[in-house]
Length: 141
Ligand SMILES: [Fe+2]
Image 1: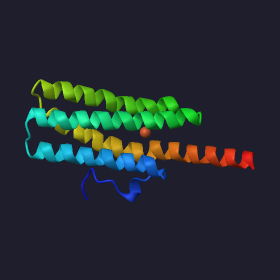
Image 2: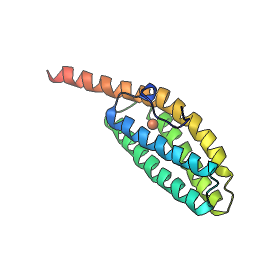
Image 3: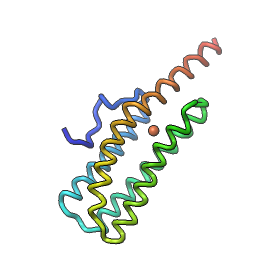
Image 4: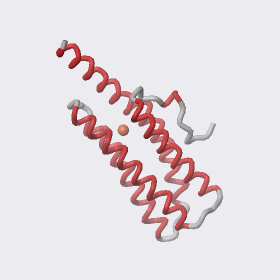
């Protein structure tokens, strides 16, 4: 199994979030393929920019959800998102400077981050959101 292949074992039991995670894994797999094929800096940069846009859209989606439910671990969770935003921007700058080897380091970081984040941090968020909805449904009935 590829390092960046989303599987049911990564599910956070929120279908929209799972779909976005699948897209992020696919983009990371695309970057990995491009690195292995020794693609040019412009091609690596294009994939990194796509990844930054998709990651930022996805993180903002989760951050909106967490605000709505007054998630108590919001800051801790957002800090993990901010780490990826920062690392991605740095990787783009370095690729622009011709330092394409940064991509392999970034992928190593991202592979570990994705698994930790999806299976712990996002699952906690998912559980909190489901409980929030159950509680409010119970109040309404
Ligand atoms: Fe998250």
